[in-house]
Amino acid sequence: MRHNIKKATRYSNTGKTHTQKLNADSIKQNLSPVDFYRHELPSTPLKRQGWNDGGLCCFHGDNNPGSFRVNLTTGAFKCFSCGIAGGDIVAFVMALYGLEFVEALAKLGDDWGLIW
Ligand SMILES: [Zn+2]
Image (cartoon, rainbow, N blue to C red; front, side, top):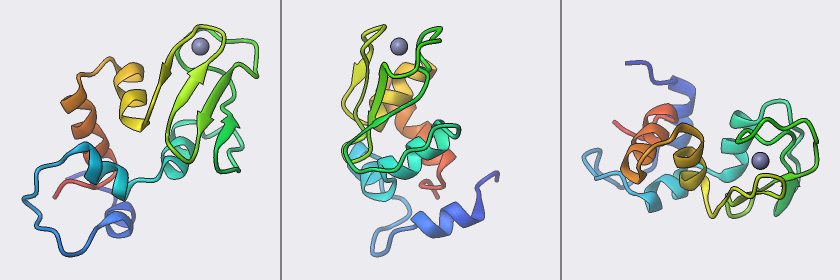
């Protein structure tokens, strides 16, 4: 078990069985885009709801800050330089790690202690 106890406690939900099948809705209910992107983009000051400057794009060899945006309300992301974009944090994980949808859900659930 490599679950982070603090995260697992923080994000544990109530009233749901632990055998519940992990799905995108349950991931998004339990993991806010703010927490996710602060973890994924630790060197970037992400402060506001809505669109934020995401710092250097992690999808191309970016040396021109200002092109990459993340939306801390919806989890959407977009790079105006390389053109990559997605609508939520699941799409981000799929794009960044080259995963299928269900693999991205599993990774998020595992990384953030959402699977029991
Ligand atoms: Zn880019």
